[in-house]
Amino acid sequence: MSVNASPSTRAYARQQGVDLDALGAATGRNTLAREDVDWHLSGETAAPATDHSRYWNVDHAAYGPVSEEPLSRMAQVAAGNLGAANAMIPQVTHHDRADMRALEAFRSSLKAEAEAQERGTRLTALAFHVKALAHCLQEFPRFNASLSADGETLISKHFVHVGIAVDTPHGLMVPVIRDADRKGLWRIAEEISDLAARAQARKIRSEEMGGASMSISSLGGIGGTAFTPIVNPPELAILGLTRMETVPVWEDGDWTPVAMVPLDLSYDHRVLNGADAARFLTRYAALLGDPRRLVLASLLSGAS
Image (cartoon, rainbow, N blue to C red; front, side):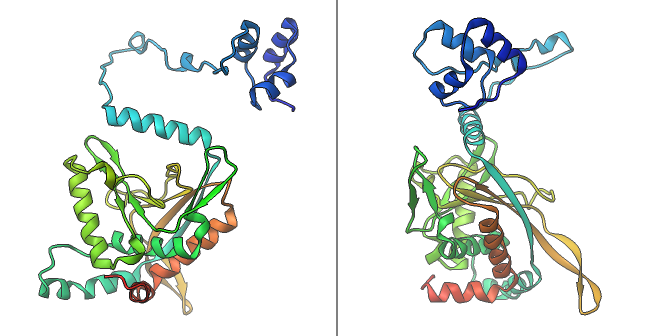
């Protein structure tokens, strides 16, 4: 096993009589630092942990006025989880966008129906995103799976649960819409509204979080044109959404202004590849581009 090490680390290892290739094989690491050599020389049996604390242990007050604010418990947990996920997962993000003209026209046409039936919920674009994602997870089952902790077994899920990232004053929460494939658009919209409100009030129950097939992180109400959402293990992918934008599209021999939504799909490259992601988002964009397909999918699945 050939390892990566800086020239200074290699020189130090030679001085100490340590074989870096043998040390790499013993620790399972491809990259070694001076700290790993010291760990080997110490005779400790616990796995070495390269010390990066020197990057954070800085006296910032030496450079100017500062103030301190302790992170909430929820923020500390999220920081640890996201840091571990980013370190463990070889993540790639595929970018695309979807034509939203037909969907927005369809949503507008349902306003009168909502008022007539005295529905207390708006049919938001996010409800369509959840429904489209649920359909794609059925059509592309490799996205609806998880990798075992040892990385040797792919666990396929025979349910479709969609997580919705909610930004709260207490930190990021991801309540889950269960069986989204079997629910209609209005039901999904109602659950999104209810879960988001209770997340803000910290009234989400533990059983309403976790177990998602895949999650959506939407910044549409804030702004931006693209971002790289971090995969939330044990999920294998996450879909990021930003604000709709008007894009010139060449149609019928002329430029036409088209309302498009940017799509950012981050995925675990150990299981999924670029072709998988491209096919997934192409199909996803096609469903959003023709909302009749989503309504038909709801009827065929018996969604209410």
